[in-house]
Image (cartoon, rainbow, N blue to C red; front, side, top):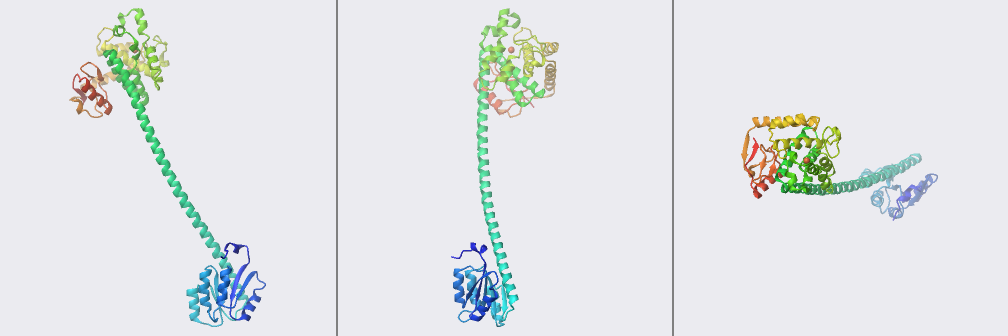
Length: 437
Ligand SMILES: [Fe+2]
């Protein structure tokens, strides 16, 4: 097997093929001083044997030889060493041979005898350079092709990795989404269960908390709080009186102005009891804080900590206003019936004393807008199964047992429609469902 790799370290090789000994001798002499390794062959057959054993750069062959003519020899030489540069040397001007040599033997040069020594040396030198150039080109091509293949493989691997990674990230996201949905669902279930406890303890208390939650949500949204903060305010409002669960029924239903000082002191503990009851539930820390402070007064005279102004969490200040309004208008505890206007007046009188003036302003705006809406907007009476997403309740919705399902102005989503259908199935709704047209 011919070793191609050694050609860079050794002298360039020239093979001369001629049936005339004296020609071979003079060619050998001519190139004796040149920096080549010379091979001499007396026939085509001998030339082929040399080519089988040695890699050469240039082959110069006589055309007219007995047995195998030069062109036939070069055709076979090409099969053995396709890169070698082939040159024909002939004493005859033979067009047919010349054409065959060019077409079939891919001859680099056609030289006639007698040759000019310097010219022949120059031809051989250029042939060697051409060989080296050709070789360097094919090596470069090979390297480029190899690199292209590697690059294509690398791209393919990279694409595959990106695809796998994308798939993995997508799966992880789906899992996280599912987990979040499950968490949100169990969180909502916990809140619903607590509201159920409140309703079981006292229907009035449960309804009061739901109305306060609806108004607080609206006010929080109007005051520019983020959706997350608005939800937090709504949940805190739903649970703001949960501390009353541990109080005797008699105390909860007693009017505030009829309580003894001991009873009042006991009643005043409900924000702390509420905070303590929820402290063990994960993610409710902020809600606990809001509940703790929902009876702080704006001027610092409230309880349990006597905070004032902005020291009181905004969510607590919102609940204090909506809580006060609901107690005034529904007269659950104070045994005095109030109209809407009287209740609004009472809120205004407490601005800066018990209540945050900004929150009261928003509440008053809200109450006016509700009244205006009432005047201008028409209602539609629907059966629960006729409800659709984004409809807004135009009246409070109660069950026949008096449990408030949702307050008016509640925008319905799929979850709330399901709750209404469940309430109708379990307890029956007190009236039809009224929504704004
Ligand atoms: Fe309270």
